[in-house]
Length: 115
Length: 113
Image (cartoon, rainbow over the protein chains, first blue to last red):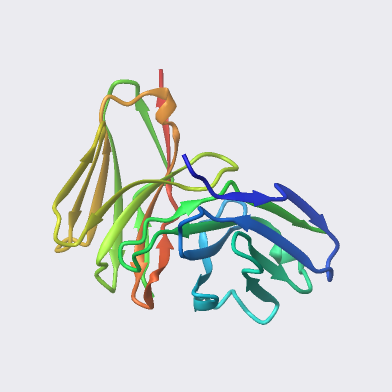
């Protein structure tokens, strides 16, 4: 069964450093998402991406964040200058062709630890 | 913005019994509602989706109801098993756009053998 994959599974970085989290969505999906989950808290929407541009973003997704689909398979989240409060699990998700009732398929996540 | 409440942080239930989890929402009435399962350290896994014009949806031992008047969804697991132990998340579309999904905080279900 096709699945979303994410690398790395765990990333440790120093405050102020840039990190790039990588995702390979399900191959025939067209909509891509990033979510984060701070330990013990709920899953929070960050951004959705369609047709090579951001379609929606949350208040969390400020200028420190960017997303890119550099080729036909990868989808990346970049945090330019990490803060301690960026420590969280980051989940990538993808969904199929419909914009309505979009069942999202999540990857296993990347645990980001900012020291 | 949409506010979602899942009735309890944790629910313990005896194996074989039916587990019932509640999701209440305020403000905007969603066009659809989803339930996900999340295991510790893992991403959410989609279980069921129900549309605003549907009252009930079933999948194997799972049943979801959607009452737009009460602004509530109930999620049932019948004949519960220890393997059903996980956190269950309710998720709704957001008035900001169909692609944005808002998750509840989840209910942690523990099925006791």
